[in-house]
Image (cartoon, rainbow, N blue to C red; front, side, top):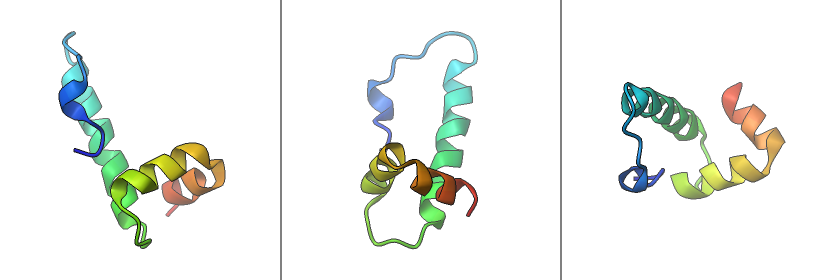
Length: 59
């Protein structure tokens, strides 16, 4: 539960399914990184550091 899915309140049409796909893509990108940090810390570092985010996307 890296993205705290239980606290999100999406109910309109296909929003739940669409965001589930986006979360899966983001998790796969984070898991491909070989760093020893947790997924949560990788996610936060990518949010704070634009260069790291670009590195994860281009991995």
